Structures are given as structure tokens and as C-alpha cells.
Length: 460
Image (cartoon, rainbow, N blue to C red):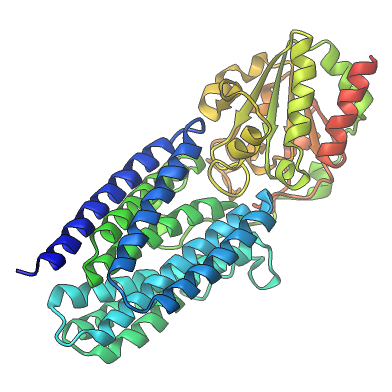
């Protein structure tokens, strides 16, 4: 026996075991905002250890080091330059490139393999299929989130589900050919799967993109796990399975939060967007207000609830929200933040922003916990939220968001909505809340408006 080889194998297995444990504990810690940073650190340490082990097995250090330098530089630039408002788009790209990496690794392993086994060929086909679907679907999701002209509106093909089924069937046939050692089938499999990813994602409306992002994250993990079987890498199998499983769980939770069907997400039949009624008629009774008037209302309030949305992220108003909340707390006002599971454009978007502004975690209240007490709220301040507070989700069966659980801000005694304009949210439908009898619209940049309200409150 070659003792040196045994030592390398033993070190590799032990390191992979430690890396896997770090991934598991890291994922556990990321389940709560308080421990999320430590979870990220553990996950990063696990990945660094796994990469170090791989370096023990290779000779072409120049190529690997070049890749690390280029990739690290790109990652560092993105980390510094990307704003929180663009984080969902960045997550979509990360999902896509993870899928693309699986496609290339599995394809490269197929080219190098002399006599691949049946399970290896099957895993190669699964990696190519899932990875390609993830890549093209993520690119479409990125385009929708970025509101690029090509992807701005959902586009359904005639007989969309029949087209999806046909593309899926062709993929299955090509995987069958690949399993029968027809290596040529891999490239057409990837090309057809790229088309399937576009067909599955393109018809989905922008309001449902957070759910799609979570599902694509799961796909990227499954593709990585399949690639792990191709190259016989245990840590890749474990980490990919963790990402895949957690992504499915998150997708299911978000589907419940939006009253969507997981089956519909999987097969690309989620709701599209619609006009939602006569805008002029709906907004005929809208009443605008001023920061000074809002300050007067807050001066007599005992309980205030902030409802953050994507507009808060765009305006970078989380610190202004926190400063106004501190002023109210100093006056003995009870302050809370109502968090909708899909507020913003990705899961946990609002939690991250408010944590950045040092908002106490105990003041962040989930939708299901805050709704039963919304009728006791003196003032609900909606900061850039739209679809997640739209009451048509409860009242209009023809609405694309009908049945989606919302934060019941319309039940508060007074509602102040801070928005630049009456423009619709991701669902592209008007919001009758803006014209309700107990609602006042403060048309302004959210950060500027909150600062002015705070100033008026101090002067008063």
C-alpha cells in the first residue's frame, strides 16, 4: 500500500467531513438574523477547507490560481458596488452561474471518462438538465427584476404547457440516449434545457419573482449535488443537497405566504399580471398630506407600526425609519415593524435592511402575528410597500394577487403611505388602500419624508 496516498485520502475524507459539518451548522445559524453572520462565516470556512483539499489533488496550480484571482476580484467588486436594492438580481445571477458551472463540470467529466458507469451517465444528464434550466431561468429572472425591456412583461407562448411538456420530454429522451453511452446527446440536452428554463420562467409575473428566485436557488443546489455524483465528490453532494433541500423548504414557505401552489411554481404556471381596474376611478378620492401634518398625527399616537417595502430599499430609508422610531419611543410610543415574508424582492430583504439600521429584532413582527392586532394600531406608516398591503388580495377574485396573505394596514385607525407616486407595484395593479377613507398619501422620497417628519415632530 502507498502510505502517502493513504494519508492524502484520509486527510481528504476528514477535511470533507469537517467542511460538511461546517455547512450544516452554518445553515442552522443562518435561520435567525442574530446568528446569520456567524452562519455565513462557518459556511465560508467550510468552502475554503473544501477548496484547499481540492488543491491537494491537482497539478495545474497556475490555472486554478488565475481562476481564484479573477473570481475573487469579481466577487469583491460586486460585494462593494452592489446596492441592497439590487441584491435579488445578484442572487439570481449567482444561482444561474452555479447552474452553468455544473453544466461545464459534468460535461468536462464526460469528455475525460473512458468507460463511464450507468449511474455516472445518469448523474451527468441530471446535472446538464438542471444546471441549464437554472442558468437560463435565472437570466430571465434577473431581467425581470432589473426590469429590462425584453423581460418587463410576462410572455406566454400559445399552448405554453404543451410546449413545456414537449421540451421536458425531449430532455428525457436525450438523457436516455446519454445513458446508452451516446455522448453526443449531452450538448443538445443542454441546449433544449436552456430553452426549457426560459419557457418555465418567462410567463411568470414580476410579483411572483421572489418565489421563483428561491426555487432557482434550490435547482442550483440540486445541479451541484448531481455534479458531485459525476465527479465522486462527497462534499459537493452534501452541500448541493443542503442548498437544494433548504431552497425547496423556503419556496414552499413563500408559496404559502403568497397563496401560490408549489406545483404551479415547478411547472411555470404562476399568475401573470393584469391591469386590475380603472386607475382614475380607483384613485378619485386620494388625499395627500405633508410631513408637518403627519407629525401632528404621530404626536397623539400610542402605537405606531412601520410597514417597509421595496421603496424603502430604493430610497435607502432604513436609517431614517429607525431615527423616527427612536423619536417616537422617547415619547413613550410603542413602535413595531410589520414584516411580510415577500416584501421587497427576495426573502428576508426587509429584515436585512432593518438589521443594518440596528432595529431591535424583537420589534420585527411577522405578518401572521401583527395582523390580529392591526385594528389597535393608531398609525400605520407604509414605507414604499405596495402589493403586500393591497386589500384587493382579500376582495377581488379576478386580481392576480387574490388570496395572497397581506398585512392588514387598512384596519389601522390612520394609514400614512409614503411613495413617490401612485405607480403600481410588481403586480402592476392599482391599490385601493391609497384612496381609503383612513389613508393619507405623502408623495415624496421616503428618506426625505421621514427626516422631515422627524424634524417637524421635534419642533412640535
